[in-house]
Amino acid sequence: MAAIKTIGVLTSGGDAPGMNAAIRAVTRSAIFSGFKVKGIYRGYRGLINDEVIELHSQDVSGIMQKGGTILKSARCKEFTTTDGRRQAYDTMRKHGIDALVVIGGDGSLSGARQFASEFNVPIVGLPGTIDNDLYGTDHTIGYDTALNTVMWCVDHIRDTATSHDRLFFIEVMGRNAGFLALNGALASGAEAAIIPEISTEVDQLAELIKYGFKKRKNSSIVLVAESPITGGAMGLAERVRKEFPQFDTRVTILGHLQRGGSPTAQDRILASRMGAAAIEALLEDQRNVMIGDDDERMIYVPFSKAIRKDKPIDHDLLDILKRLTI
Ligand code: ADP
Image 1 (cartoon, rainbow, N blue to C red):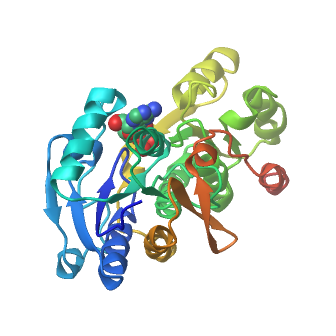
Image 2: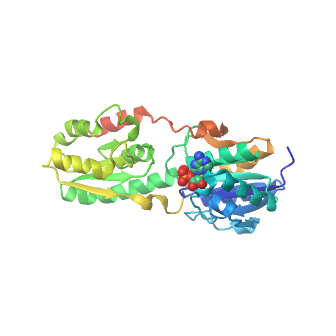
Image 3: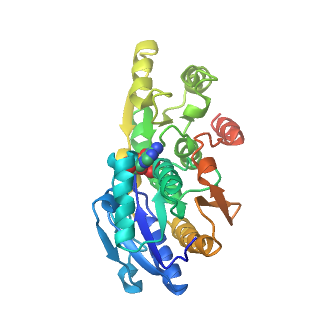
């Protein structure tokens, strides 16, 4: 393997708060270790379309506190084809990029894995997604900020829910993972969380009606993970209107609100540590691994493991939620 001289960095897929802190950490750690750094705009699309600039230390000044990503992000269908990936590889060669740091979610890391194996490119991934659904890391970059946003929104909805004795279904993001819904419910004192991980085991709505609403509380808030498996907030509210018309039901979909905003201290620190760890990984000749946070320790997780799509939810948290909402 030829020595790495230039490292490319890109953000791909759904944006997440903290991505800028990660770009900053990757850029500065790389420069500190003697590498050149090239920033690639719009994820894989920019790699195919040759949107590449050199990044110097001052280019990443003052970005830490900003949400979104200064390198922009995109989804790119072409990259899922061999031709597209070949063009991406040609752009890398043209700019002398020897290795890549890819900041993104499960799709972006799946693409990285494919690209790395096809073209023998050293790639290190950073888990950048608000969904927290990557296997092998306790937390992903952006998750803590999104969780705080969810909590803030639910606190506000609670005021109107109690004033009108309403049952609110609040849909949160998560792409088939219930981390935001479950921990958001715990953080905001919501009555329940309906999550895809246990949807096949129990009829969560039926349980909720049985144990939850009969308690004659003056309002109820239920967090629902967006997913075809849970039926989403709209689907559940529809069911309640048909089966339990006595409830005054409302739906709020938090949507893209959850992606924005200044990252929390926790996300900034995590992104900084992971960005530095990505460069360490390349220096240690690691390839095709994602940086993970294992009990506050930075670890290397093979892409194949990170994208397994079955990161387990902590069932103890579900029990605690049940106990605390009697
Ligand atoms: P995220 O990274 O947030 O999960 P996406 O799932 O949209 O976002 O993936 C981002 C991009 O990664 C896609 O637009 C595509 O270019 C690339 N990608 C995703 N899956 C694959 C795959 N299996 N093979 C090649 N590229 C992929």
